[in-house]
Each structure stands twice: as C-alpha cells, then as structure tokens.
Length: 302
Image 1: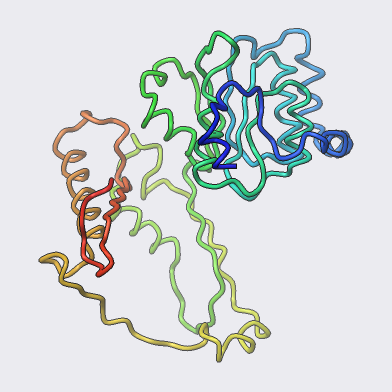
Image 2: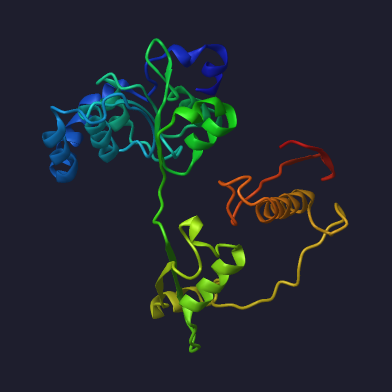
C-alpha cells in the first residue's frame, strides 16, 4: 500500500480499509457486541434526542475493533462527528473497520499497516467534511494523534476542548513474579522513586506523598521457576557497563544527547517556575543519529 500512497493523493478518500466486503460480517459481530455493552447502549437511549455532543468533532486513535465500533456509533448517536484511525498497526479487526466505513464514517485503519501508513492514517482524521473543519476533541491511546497535532499542526491545539489518554490518575502499579525470602516495603520504594523523579508537588495532580501504590508482585509459580531455571530467568549475572569512543562520556552519542536534553529540561522546569506548565519531571527525549557502514556517526537526524 505504501507504493500506492506514493503515486496517488489519497487525502480525498472518504475512508481506507483492507476489504470493504467484510462489512456484513463486521455488522453481525457489532450487533452481538452491543448486547455485551449495556452502558453505551443506555447512553444512546437516554441522550438520543438531546444530542449532548452536537458540535463535537472527535478524532479517535484507538484499536479499531468490534467494541470500538460500538463506541464510534454511540458517539455519532450522541451528536458528534467522528473520524477514526488505529493506535496499533497490528490490532485492527478489518471486518470492524469495514462495517464502520459503510456507515459513512471516515475510518483509516487496516491490520498490517507500515509505519508510514500508520502516520498517514492518523493525519487523515484531523479535518472534517468538505470544508475541512479541524478536530476539536481527541480520543487517544498512546499519544500518536496528540503528538501529530502538537508537532505538525500546533495551530489546532487552541480549539481542542478535551483529550483522553489511557491513564489512571494518582496510581502506581507494580507487578511481576519473583522468588525471594527477602521482605521489601514496596510502597516506600515506590514513593521514594517517585520523589526522586521530581513529583513532589500536588500541583502535578500526582506526587510521592499522596499517590496510591498497588502492589501486584506475586511469588513465582514453581512450574514456571522449574521451566526457566536453565533458560535465563533463573540465572544471575552482573553487567559492569558498556562503553564506546563516540563521546567523552564513553556513551553512544544518541544516549548522551538524550540525557543532556533531559537535564536541560529539568533545569528549565526548576529555574523558570511556570514558564512551561506542561513540562513534567518525567519528561523524555529521543535522539536519532545516522551512522555509516563503519558505525561512525554521520549526522543528527532528529
């Protein structure tokens, strides 16, 4: 599909899915799913006349599944205009996407997208109708749609009334399976770590003193322990470090630059209180370097 995209302007397409002939199959599964999603169906019934979402132009970037199809149709029933892409290149159920497409939803999703196609699909959801009105609400899973708005179309942000991402406010979940006789005060370790990161103020709506800690660490299953003991998980080792000659710090250049960017962000956050209110203690950075065939750095890509 990438070659086709390179040759044609697909921005005029009302939708793009794998196989529109799968729509009937998708509709049958949507009907079954509606019976298992009484909350959304109750919303449709209660608000079908008042249309509380009238005027909302919602761009969604969630897994394009049968259950998501029920959500999409519910949003329209409540008065919203809706466009859709998938947040994962492998998670789309093609029959669900087809069923939504035949209902005249602008949906751009299919299983097995390339990364180029993934970005293209998201970009198609930013504008609505023939007059290309921009989105004013976002449903996002993973932040790819949100990132595209801020990175490529920042002028749209001022008119966006709401964002939704997968999160549980104020909760730290620690999970895993271990085999040990030691006792660890997990909440104390978590709170100490959160404090070191920099979440020390209630203004962030998440801080080391008030956050909830859910400990989901369990004893390792004896069967699993026996099965993996000689395969890696039962072995122990020590990593002394990794060094290279790309930087004075003896670290790979992308890592060194990424670390310095994060340190600069921390300095800005601490020194210019309120200057960048959206900058948080766990800000991240990513640096991409192009290397030659001898693994020597050539240039900074991004």
